[in-house]
Length: 233
Image (cartoon, rainbow, N blue to C red; front, side, top):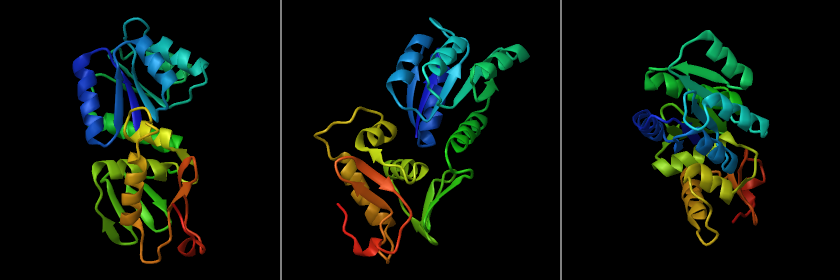
């Protein structure tokens, strides 16, 4: 999952970024309001962490601008000012949650997970597809009762696919959310990782959970009775 952090205090931004990356998120950082608007308009994020007190444009103006542009990405606002009016203003402008500074990272991470659950179809910390399950807290994957060992990138790829179950995901979208850079049409990195992931999560029935969509990308969906007999790229 890809998160944008808009925070002008560089130590705080670095602290948040490091913590989120340890939670296996892909993280971009902007240090002023205008840069935050630019990144939010150019990229597809799963959540935005937005400080109120920012140079060039404050967090309220950033939120107002991105909502006016039709951006519905969940937003968690941070503020050192704990007044009720600030919270009301942010929520009225379209913020989804509010966290006063100083805060413990554990609470911020929990609020981010809550935002992602609200935005997606899954309402628990466990994502499922058939008998494949992924615990987004412990970062463990299971096919039935058998645990699957995953690398960091394999986990990030599997989580993104499972959070978007039944949705066709282009290679460009996958690259942005899992690797945080623009898609290189000459690279086969997505295909390599999908092949590795398929090998790890396929059970004895050989029912495919990750299917290729020719010329577009991949989709994760529930297995059906024909999957074991159908070929795939």
